[in-house]
Image 1: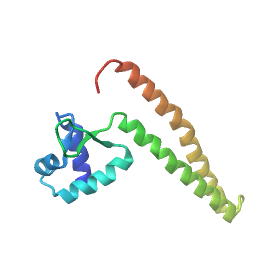
Image 2 (image 1 turned 180 degrees about the horizontal axis):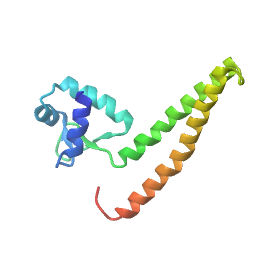
Image 3 (image 1 turned 90 degrees about the vertical axis):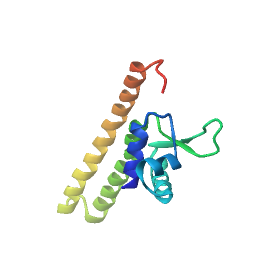
Image 4 (image 1 turned 45 degrees about the vertical axis):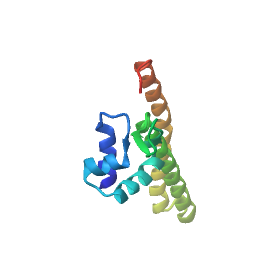
Length: 136
């Protein structure tokens, strides 16, 4: 829960970045909750730690391109699901009832991967062209 609140605070802040202390004060959460949120959101690519001139504290901001990056990471999950379906097909046999179900699963995840990669690339190009010369 704190992770979602932390993310929303960064998304809606009027500041370029926020410190952990800013989050604690604004959201009435503990420093431990902030630390947990940071540990969850940085690996997802949604937020990043940034330097702040004159400050020795860690500052965090919502990462530019976060949404496309998050969707790109989902492709790894799609590949994992497709591989799991193939393992199931190999174990159950292609012509079994389970094998037929697993074929649909495998084909679905292959299709989603095939469609999402160019879609994400297209979004990045579209966004870059639309916002060329605009500061982050």
